[in-house]
Length: 105
Image (cartoon, rainbow, N blue to C red; front, side, top):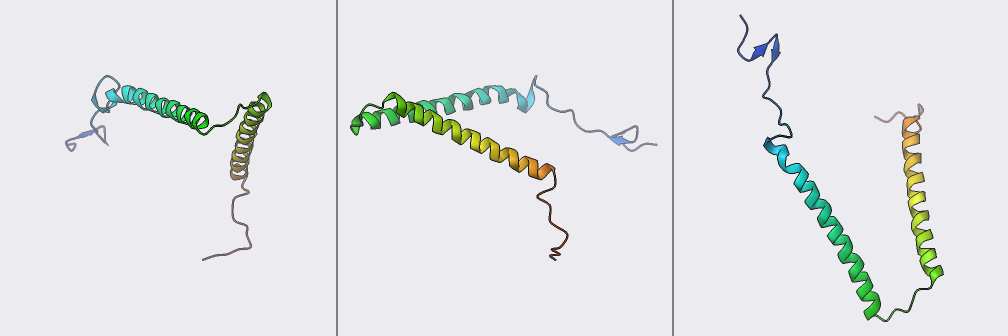
């Protein structure tokens, strides 16, 4: 005789929540609200930076200034991506493992 709750020797678990109901139903709208809130914060930050630049009397930025800012941002993104690639490479190939000479207890 089998114990109650066992089907073919395995315990039976309650059914998982699916996208048609339960707790997962609000994830889509919440994700949309979070994305909208983040874009609103980005827009507010850009507006604040522009308003501060105008009120503090900053001069016009020439074309090469915008070019330098874009180049600096691109260089920073490339450098960050390259460093992250090195982290993953060293982790995958065992360079982050401890050497055999240091026995720490």
